[in-house]
Image: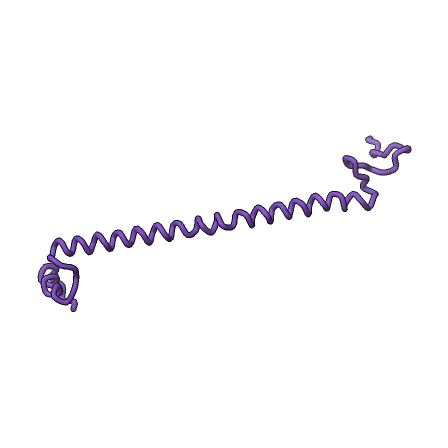
Length: 103
């Protein structure tokens, strides 16, 4: 049979670190740490916000640049094959070569 744990008679309050649990100040002192931690987290998030936004823009920008290059290469290939860039006068040679019935 085990005896229940009892506090020594000369120390009626339970202490955690330097704060007494029965004291109304222990939660205020630990609350200051909690508020400071929350403020630090918010500030860190606020400082990281431009980096996150920039990292989301970069893939879109590189995709757009890649697409523009592809369009440019296609136009230069067309110009090499038909002698000029696409216009009204190149529609009939393109239709003959590709066999399409599209206008």
